[in-house]
Image (cartoon, rainbow, N blue to C red; front, side, top):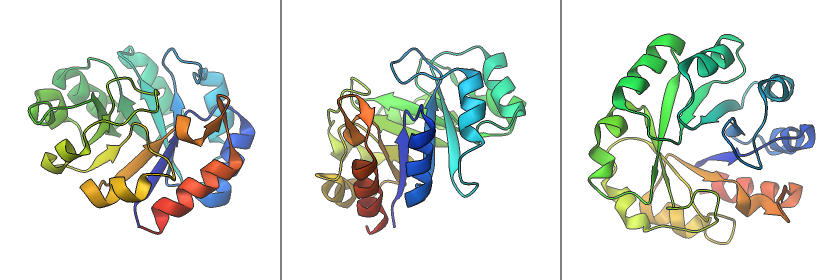
Amino acid sequence: MTRIKICGLSLPEHVQWANEVLVDYVGFVFASSRRMVSEEQAIELSALVDPRIQVVGVFVDAPLGRIVSLSDKQVINLIQLHGNESAEYIHEIRRLTNLAVIKALWSPSVDDLQSPSAEAADYLLLDSAQPGSGRCFDWTVAKACSKPFFLAGGLGAHNLEDAIACCHPFAVDLSSAVEVSGRKDRFLMHQAVACAHRL
C-alpha cells in the first residue's frame, strides 16, 4: 500500500471526505495561495480530522514562531517547507517543535537530493517546477533519492499506477488533480485514495 496525502484542504467537507476514505495525510496551506487557511481555520479543521490521519502544515519561508505556535496548539503533526529554508532553519524548527520535517524540492536534480537542506529533513517532497500546476517532472530522478519521499506534481488516478511503479515513493501528494474548477471533489478524492492504497 502506498501512502497518500491530499493537500490544500480548506473546508469542513474536505476533511469529511478525507475521513471517509481514511487518507494518510491531509495538508493545510499556510502560505500565500488560493488554498491558504488562517490559523483559526486550521484549528477548526484539524479538530475534525480523524485521529488516524496526520495533519501536515505547509509553509514557505515562514517565521519560526508561526510554525511553533501551530505545533504547540497541536494543529499540525508534520511540517512541510516549500521555500528556501536552510539546513540550519530545519534543524532549529525540529528542535523547537520535535516534529518531522518534509522539505520540498522543485523539479529536482540528483545534486538537489544531496543538498544540505535536503539532508537535514526527515522526508523530501519531489514536485514539478511549478507546484500546484498539475504538471509532472522527470520521475526517474526520484530513483536516486536515499530517504523517504513524497511524490507530487501532476499526479491523479490516471497516472498514479505508473508513478508508483516507476519510483516507489513513500507517499504520493495530490492537490489540483482532485479538484474540479478549483474546488476539491469528493469522487476524485475517493478515486485517488483507493488507487494509491491498492498499490
